[in-house]
Image (cartoon, rainbow, N blue to C red):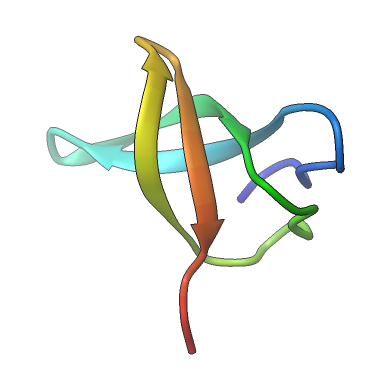
Amino acid sequence: MTVAIPQDGPGEVLVAVRGGSEAYAAWAAAPVAKDVRVIVTDSISARSVIVEPLPA
């Protein structure tokens, strides 16, 4: 996570893609702090995803 996800807005995550990483706008059901590892659960568009914190 490169930019925290607030309650009602997008943040930004880096996603491993084709041997590198790319930034995507990210949305979540609850706020997620910066530098928290997340898992992508759905895609909204080509550059936007829905995430949730990675279970411990």
